[in-house]
Length: 386
Image 1: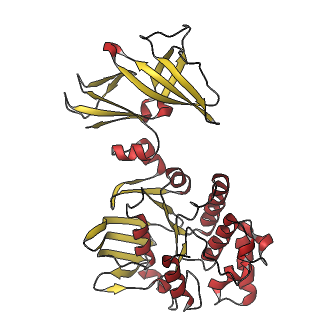
Image 2 (image 1 turned 45 degrees about the vertical axis):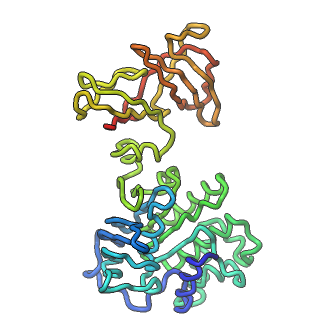
Image 3 (image 1 turned 120 degrees about the vertical axis):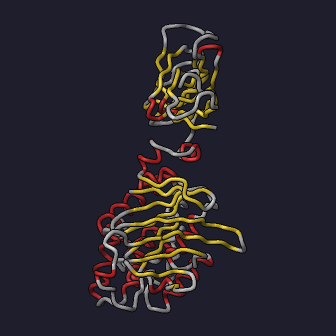
């Protein structure tokens, strides 16, 4: 258990609850936002004069899953800590359920009074309690039969009901993580905050637990803020993604928005491997080894970066044998399971040449030197001014 977890769990246990304690009554409906359950408004945070978060605003509606995505050190976890009440913002406001809970110099409501759930990368279960007792810990206000019934239901939904009387040390890491999620969800928090809870699991188990967790969150209509550095996880889990870089938001939108309509080369690169080609605009077009592309909105003569996703490259073998320097040809092919990756030397007009990767569904393994014709799915081709 790290210092972050000890601090959070220690403060909450003083109030005889876990991850969801609010001793006061709920505010009247007129004071709660009908649109957003959690709002971060122009939030800034700095440590020792170094800005970690700069002017970030986001809203989460009831039942919505929002992912904070970005590389390590971009400010994701700091924002989650600010939402939880573990970190005070330097500037800006945090509004939870219509209540102002953080504003520098005015108010800072501690985590035990925010009615939020928090799950960590490590499960942080209580070793002296059974699995059922761990899940019941945060709902002491309910009568014992109701506590047990609610905890048992969540354990069933997460595939752990058969381990209710076991102790944490007897479970695998993946099983412990399921129990930690059930424990955090048991008090029906207004907002669920997940700090990379699946990153320590192996790939197959991670996929299953992510799927189970998403179904439970949607079933309970829990507003969720998830921190991750894994773009595939963000696309699987999120209704909206907030992509960050160096403490700032680069782009916010649905997974389809960020993948198909990126606003910056950083966005394209972050979602996977990409083929890059540099050229200049001539007569409103860019000449590449894979064809001429329209450069709408770019001034004549400007240098641009052409970014082509591997799945945008369509490969057709030609009825030509052997290696021909004037034709595009296969350098090597590799089977990746559900898809094949083909390395291609692409040749265009005026001796243009480019090494590119094509990702093709299924088994597609043309031999080395195979001549090919190339075309593009233009929806996965992006042009940015240098």
